[in-house]
Image (cartoon, rainbow, N blue to C red; front, side):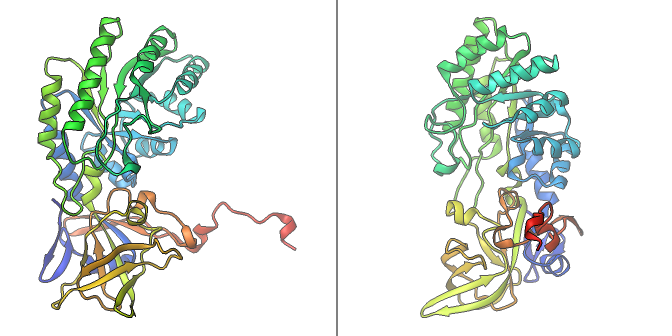
Length: 419
């Protein structure tokens, strides 16, 4: 659920008319509902109340500082995949003891900073990475808590770009190699084996793949314990899907109950990495119709938002519901919603039955909170847009729209070109 709804034919974000926000902040703009994100976090976290756990919000879904601060205030942690995300998580007030570092390509500098900060654990993705972490631990004279991300070879039946638990994917270490590496960790004076990790993919709408993954992790935890290696954490990743169109993902309570049934009788502490399920439906992307173009029987709504602002439709052919900010009567029109970027892939919808829009109308692209702004860019020298957080009757600009000067920040022209 979310707190975006119509009142007197006007779309509201909580208690604020969306049109008012758009008038003040300009378009295109991301608008977040604090109440929605708070509720989603509490429902997800509360579903696991019977299991010792840490809910580590996946920063890559959306790393807006105000949203990370929301997670911190609700008692959550962070799943990070870069040194930049570590910096943001700490700046937002998330305790180091609730931060886990995932990702296949950690640099030495990023590893050093994670060790210096004292985060909960670093998830290993390869034998080479393990050697790099061991060298950093020795150099800093500090034991490093590590986990191995195993690849359980489970098909989550999702988009191939967001599948991460198969042998053909770049993520994780196969089970047999992982067993050997745990022995290597246990014998290293600068490494401490504290956990095991797995993440099989994103936007998963069925429970069985999760259960299969947890069962495989439980088996390895049991084997390692018998070999004298006792782990504290089991990181089962994120990936629970949301409704964009007609998907019917399981509720967090169903997911939690299934996991609990597998882990009953164990003393392991779960690490959960929800991202999309927390923030996905917490935001809308509002864009303005610049022109209505007719090409024979074809209708194009040309808007001021573009693929550089919200790339999911172009990248994944992802569906996002599109609704008017002001309701109007009339028959629907089959149209494409396209942006100004010089690419045929710059679209938000293709050949879709939509309300009749006119020049100057505002449309809201729904479920835009996850992988929206966080994947945006300056392609075509377009400025990244503003972000606004709504709480009840108030709203706050949490990120200003970039200026033209921001486009050249950090750049310089060599002296030989100044003539």
